[in-house]
Length: 416
Ligand SMILES: *Cc1c(COP(=O)(O)O)cnc(C)c1O
Image 1 (tube, rainbow, N blue to C red):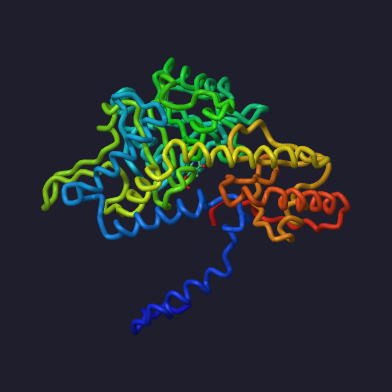
Image 2 (image 1 turned 90 degrees about the vertical axis):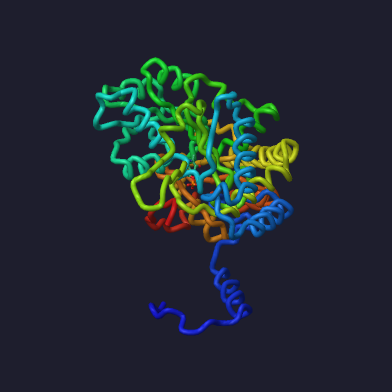
């Protein structure tokens, strides 16, 4: 690494070759060796996303009047997503750069809503289940508010009683996940929403990972409890296009049940030299590529395309669940209804299993509490590797039980 600015331009071939060579160290996500960070809906889906993204490579969604075509694409994506998640006529939304930004907008909107509705609160607190995504704390950290995380129940879902106990006169907001990331279980959203309504609190449902698969899973007959805008009291939601929407990265949605709350979301400013400035989300300039790619992929797949993919993924996770449960000593954590799961072991050290799987070339991700192997999120790269995974897992558990694997303490990370 040198801190010297490239003194001379290089050739396109040289540059692309260097990029390609650098990728050699990266995990083989196309081979299904990792269960998070990438989402694959098929080569055809990838190609249309790339083509659309390229067409809007330079356009900037900050300038809706300069690029009305881009504004229309974003409006379509939001309208379709609201349709999927049962937003009513009053619902509204914005595209964001990802789940973290959508959640940040949720916390920010709730905070500004509470300034009107809970004017006595000067140090606001958000009450969340322990399993909620770190993005809520990141948002709170940025916005100068606090998050109180409450222990989850034995089924790893939010414990509504404990959340109720945590509410005091500083509380402005409740959080629930559909599903949460660590174990893939869906919190009891209806009960939490009732609590939110009783106490006049904002409720954000984090459907970052579930938003674009749970509706299709339900259609396929899976037991998916109510989690979206059909539940009275849900005021905002996050749903990531760049996860189970299979669109280009840099794309999520932040949704409001009632557009009257948009005034708490949007930033407007006049006190400077260039006139009225208005911006609904965090960035100023916003890339057109992810918006165009999202519009193109949603149009390309449509309801029937997503339904087909959800069917294949649920089929794959059923086979994985059956295979994992059949291995003596392994248990799946909770009862995850979608395409995320974690498993652990009472008979052997799950860290040894993780190590043995790593030795077999899997990029194994783990959960901290309880100690587990996290399958992350299944996507279409995983459909062909289920049998291979299970046979490697069977052998890895045997090795772990035999004591042949030396356990090294290793930080459990997500990000970094
Ligand atoms: C992925 C995820 C997020 C964060 O989304 P990013 O796109 O990584 O910022 C938030 N909540 C849940 C449940 C997630 O799975």
